[in-house]
Image 1 (cartoon, chains in turn brown, purple):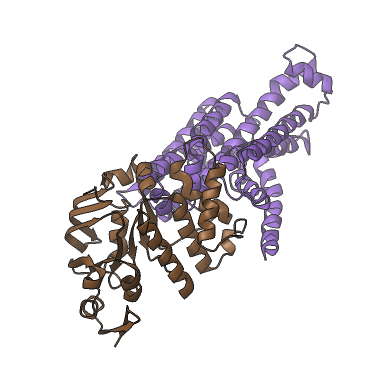
Image 2 (cartoon, each protein chain N blue to C red):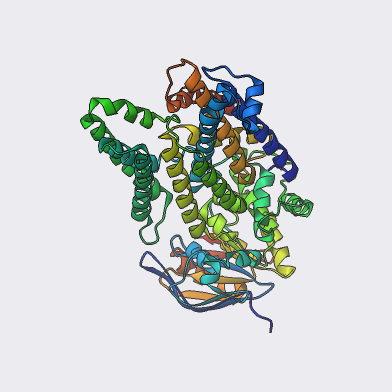
Length: 260
Length: 334
């Protein structure tokens, strides 16, 4: 079996004295698409940031494509890490004016040498990413004039331009309308099928069941449950997860979950 | 962002502007000089009174002005990235306040000019270390904490400056006020400031793309492979040093550090080039340098033989220009 893209052994993650998970043994392989589900404050984003190497874990081992975290993510190894894993943050900041094209090209940073300027090839990659998100024709637009949904798609395009193998997505569907939610999930599904892997924090268990092959549930009291989406995402587990009764509806082979 | 060719072209134009401003500074003044005198002085020939004035007085002063303008503009650009706030400038973080306390204490103690410069530098460094030490803490090296600490230290320095001014003897007061308002008249030698300016550019330019990322947020920069903590500490220390050297050379000249990066950025946005530090850093240095050279030339000629403090002039000219440009911008975007 080839080496996993991400491997956690007995991982312990805390934030502000609150334990998010303990003894998490988990691996993400090429082709996997994982959904992380949990109620507000369960620590989904904190766990994802830890997996990205943006904060240190409190215990256990963490490996991303053979690079040991947290050291690889924080110090000089950050560049090597950035060529392997991409991280989509929940919030985008634009304190200074900038164009859409400039913002996408930021994703090329880990692939450029210290004195390199973005080449025609980098611009081609950026254009392709914009096209894929339906942002063609936006290249010269001022970022601060974009709508929330457009800005979110721009962040996804930037991530695609980075061309990582492991995509860590913190609420990738924020601000998106339904058609774009579907488009973005399908886009990442294609990436996973083509040899990448996805770990996405999601809020809609229906989307998770439809577009992700695996799921990790965080119960917020350091309990967790991981496995194939078909086994893990059930009305019973979700009722316990969200602390609210949920019912499963079947539509044309898809499973959707609605609050009772 | 601009292509590399366009960036180099813009820099060539700005170098032209810088040379032009230096020529104006050499030619203008109460003693009229001819173009031949300027050429004669620059080629290193001995000559008459005019050549003496150019080589001995105007050239060192113009070069010092250029260096200080460049230093303040570079420090301002760096601080704006560090605090991710286009309104940050080198003086916000209390560095010039520390320098002022040092310099004025030296004057109060009756020390010589050289010792006063040394005291200003020590004061700036002390303020920088104080802010750095207090804001650094363990891991919470946040922008708001840094900004708040800087503002408080600056306020404390302001109080000490006011105290010194109120107890200082009459005869020292005028020199102190000139120093506080910025004055290139007692710049001893331009070379240390020019050397530090060159060093600052050499150190920051290789990291310009990292700074681009940092200006978009720590998380994004870290996720894309910038080692954020190291780069931020580096920026802070460097920007503080640049400010300290500028303040030591010419007293506290406000406004250049805030306005120059902003004007250059506005121009770049007009051209559709966004906010690329690879062009912004060197362009701000050249533009800031030229601006201060021209402002200083104006300050020593406008009501000659009396001289104005150049800091007053930069503010008097800069405020309306800045407000005009800022007020105009949003209407065009709508």
